Length: 261
Length: 114
Image (tube, rainbow over all chains, first blue to last red; front, side):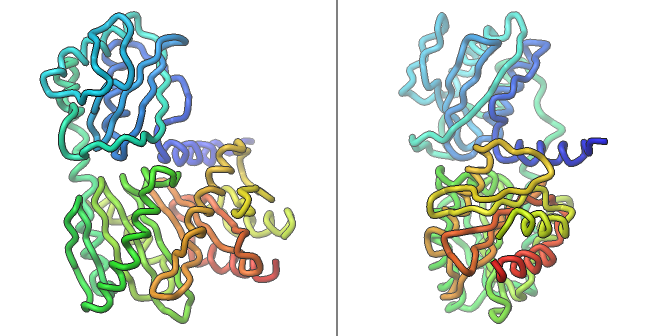
């Protein structure tokens, strides 16, 4: 008998890497179609060009970053001529909703793919938020999913405290020292800067997963009796040097903290 | 390293769903053993992850970092550099409940005789 649980977990893991790669999703209503697109925007932190193929024909190209729809990356045939070079603003929400609505009349399947875009976007300003898009499209607010609360990293930080030799908290351009003597923290910062650049580069295939909700663990030789981590949630990062060669407790704590936040 | 070595290694680790042995210098997948058949581009992406992690200098405070693991809510990837040839690496895809201590021990044991 085929073990479907393994297949299911493997598929979930593949999906966690980013947007599903080319699988067509059935859409049975206009609202369901729009919701797929808004969800794609809502799960995009690093700049991505999202391609939406409706049925087997029309394609729409959007740029998203920082969980915001930043702009149409190409003109939309037969619709309001959005300028692909101009970022969307709050007052564009109704026009964008109309474009999305027209795509799913009649409802058909949708295929959503994404790839990195070299264009830089301000992750905190501009564009249209998923909430604004939902409101403009007449969808119910996503009340059941309080992502900010889900991704609170405080339980993880608190759990690590005694084993933390040095820890940095990085959020946007602010870096705070959470624990550690000056020399250890300096060494940690020196290591973290190029490592973060590599881990979060658009060319690194796991960058989006780490940025959204992930942990990278760097195991050192047993004699060093410590390990280093970079944990990311919604664009904020904990970089820490942790006592003990075995990272299993740290990973267990990280998994547990995700369910307790 | 043979395909039997890789299969024996994975058989010890129920949560390890895929093990890939790759030449990260050339980006060539050399051996795979998995519970599912993965498309080549997926294997290539895994190989690219290892290459990017080990290509630069991931040393921490002057000490080599190996393995390097990246975990998310639904599982993780664990990358080991082959001690006999730093251009080769073992890449594993594991479930979230993986016993990483056992994984590291088993991988280091296998790579030591490769």
